[in-house]
Length: 352
Image (cartoon, rainbow, N blue to C red; front, side, top):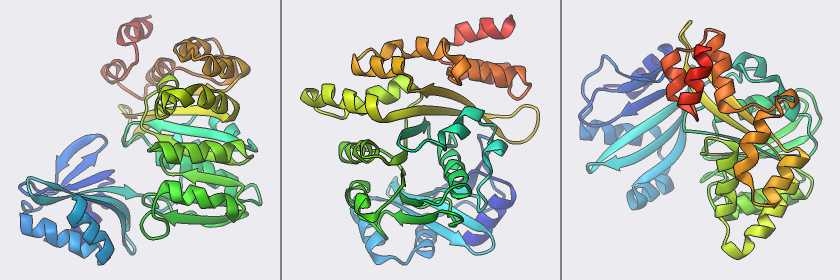
């Protein structure tokens, strides 16, 4: 069973993810549905061999042996690139791959609200794109960075784990640093990035206190910073950041976050019912003076009301966004209700 043949078939099927697990045939995710491929069942020996085929990096393999997990990227020339996580399950190697498209789609092709494009004109501050795994965060960020790349003469530095979309310098000078190969950690990369004269910084994920603090500091010192969190809405995002800090520092970080945060964009991806493909429902919180005041005063529970009453500014709640794509005929009613923040309320809205 040839690894590259499996991956080539997956790309031809337009699969988003490929899973290689001993005891199962290769599995792909097609428009959110896990589907077996027409290949033999993977054995423990073949899954281990596939990992060795993907990387000859001895440091990475040694780290995998030690911590039983490894993240890296893999490329098949002429086929595509993949974000890879290798891990152990039932004492055998298992591999999950995310297919990364070579071409960065323009923002208008992603069905994103127009206000997101306006965020790329901001000179400074922190912009967070959040959502579950597979919600399209990386694609949205790449499209936003590409919009800046085609418009301004600036210096962009990214720190990613691993590099997903390869960004080609156009008007901007773009440097992409990958954890493991170019930098030991997000926090280390961010500690040094301010000495590299960036205008715009992309942090793959604010996954710990040190990284989060460095990202906020970079935004506070006049840079435009993009990053992601695995949160599902604006209120939860702000609470997650503040909860990373010790209790005696939380008032200070509320003030810093209120000053630096520009927007939280929270995505939920749906399988389209009208044709093949996916479509996002996007909650958008813009940091107006009212929102900044709520963050400072630890009243984040009131943010949904501010979002709801400021739709004219471009803000939108998740449920309103879901209702919009439902009424546009893009998703099914069952899917809409099952992903809603308030299912009963949305069901009444859709029946009206």
